[in-house]
Image (cartoon, rainbow, N blue to C red; front, side, top):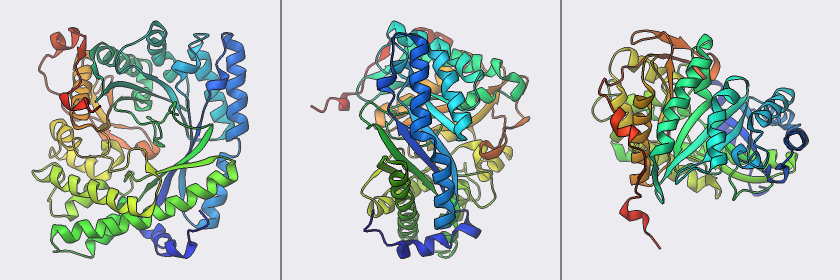
Length: 452
């Protein structure tokens, strides 16, 4: 980190005030493997004590660096070893969720991720018990986020787990119906989940990670949009080059913040995640970038191609700026968190089908999409299965975070507040997928998974 000259990022820092540049999150990734215990109460104490000890100064460090460097650090988060593993000896999963939530509240962080399980090939009895605990744990805590990996290119798609995911989403929606099903916003289903993701709700500490690691998520859709406005009329080769150069500057800022945060927290520096994460703020939209490229509205023909260009250029520019790139790294397209996406859905120009097509080339998948409250569990599972198929076949991470809002239908809107934004209820196909989902079993891994 000493090789980085602070002067190299002064131009980037000047982008903060009028272009919404920020470090979206500093996420401290903690291993809790040494906290597992057959005695549930002892496990709770070990987990609480470790999180408080290792993450107690995270918010203080984030605020100090933000003031020192002049770069907003929006979120301070913690991710932990999947609770399905840590809690297996005792089966005290919900108890661990509660003490993790207590620690998160006392520390003052925004979210804590890792109420997670990896069931992409099969489920043990303990993992099935864990999955059944998710609705209670997430609906009764404020800061805890859950992620479940149900598919991978190497193993295929666990359709038994996929079927269960739809039922969990529905139960979460019902348990938090008085809050517009906000519980579903803290639950995400993955294919090819990564171990060093700093973003919620999908962050967890993988078994290949160290004792304590700082992972940083940088963002700057507004910065990219401002740069592209200066090259109006240029060909797409030039557009890609401008995005690469801009991503380089943004990533250098993240590298600087991450290295300093790790040093102050006594942790290792992990990765910089290059994902362009939008916010509901005007001028901080991925959709706007695509429209600056020449689309009259995101969702029209050409949207997927424009998003592919953006995603690739961001990665190329970021990789040149940091030797430690990881996480998800690309462009997020969460509907409720992107003013341009919200506008396109309201106008009927962006459909669920088009969003699915876009996920074949974007950073993650179907994210923060509000569905009619009467959407069936089987339909939600089918949406998850489709997204998993895109991830498995294309050997990329995909995910689904959808919110069936009880009592709401197409034409209604929900407001989740803060960075979660607001979302119009989007139409869902009325085709019945129930028989397909109820078959269960495994959709086998694709042929190209046999690489040994």
